[in-house]
Image 1: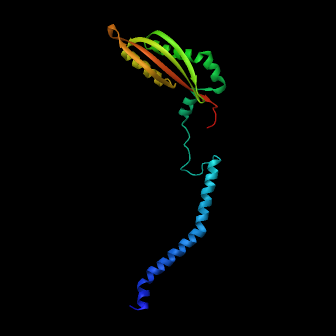
Image 2: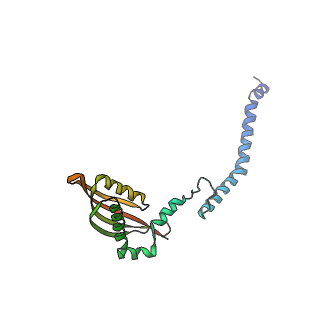
Image 3: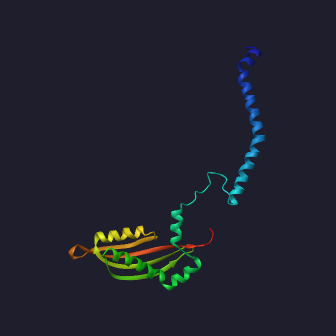
Length: 184
């Protein structure tokens, strides 16, 4: 095989290799520094709070969620005063008792609990003893879930009574968020 036939045979592959190498050199000297600069600028903008990268953008909360948070929050300045006064615990007992009475449930005993606080929220507990039909107790829990307050059922003990009625002990917690909390 002569040198001429070898060049003709391997020439296209050699030309492609030379073109590829020259494009790689052009890319690394021209575009790689620009791309690196662009990424660092996006990072700096993100640290300042701008969301220029659509993958990093946070969707805004729906208005109903914002309203739910607002209705279930207290100002930090008022949180200590409300927790110490016992108003929140008494209000929780009142709200649950009124809803139970609307369902023809007898409230045999109620006991407001203590309020506990964290940096971002506070919780108020209450204990109620109820008597009624099982269906009424379930509907009471459904009414409370639809009320819009952030309730948590900590304990629910149900015991049968004569005549198709039940006795229920309900320990309930309401969570209130603190507005104007510390930045995270």
